[in-house]
Structure formats: structure tokens, C-alpha cells
Length: 122
Image (tube, rainbow, N blue to C red; front, side, top):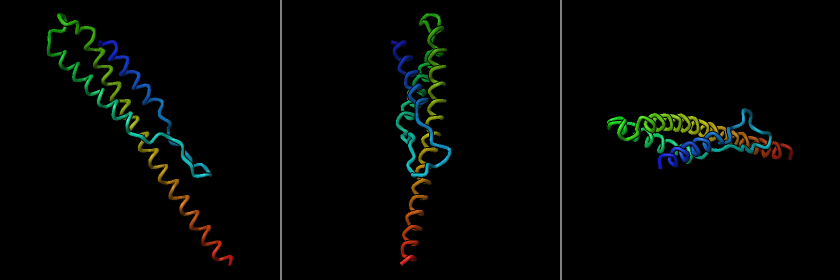
């Protein structure tokens, strides 16, 4: 069971790593393609906290009798990795949202300027 938990947690961490980052420069067409969803980072944070809770619980028990000598460090490392991944994913999602908002503002400003130019040309 613990192997399945660890594999699922590390797989989720890989999902956070595959999030599409915001571009450094806003494209000319003002369409920004990046991941702005907080769903995966939130799930990673929840599983990270759960993994650390399991490790802390195991540390309060007799680690030799329960086999905790093996699974407590793995749970701690997995939990820490998930929390780091969740923080990075949340940062990328916030950055993506900011770039998308800025691109929308620039597109609106360009539309207003084009409308003003058309009005002045009449």
C-alpha cells in the first residue's frame, strides 16, 4: 500500500513539473498559453501534508517494530518533495495569471487606440 501511495505522490509531483510556464514576453497576438490552474498544486500540497503527517505519526511509534526505519524517511522525503512542487506550481500559476491579465490589458488598450484612430481618420 505504501508503495502505491509513494508512486501516486511522485506522479502528482511530476504533473506539477509539467505545468506550462508563462512566456517571458507577451506574444504579438496577445494570446498567452500557460497553466493558470491551482488544482494540481493544491492537490500536491494536500498530499504533501498528509505524507508528512504519516511520517510524524510513524516517528512517534516504534520504528523498528513497524518497519518505519524504511517508510518514515520515504514518507518525509515524499511529503517535502510534494510541498516544494506545490509551492513552485502555485508560483507558476500566479505568474501565468498575471501575464494573461497584462496581455488582456494590452489588447484592450490596442483596441481603444485603434478605435480612436478610426474616429480621427473620419
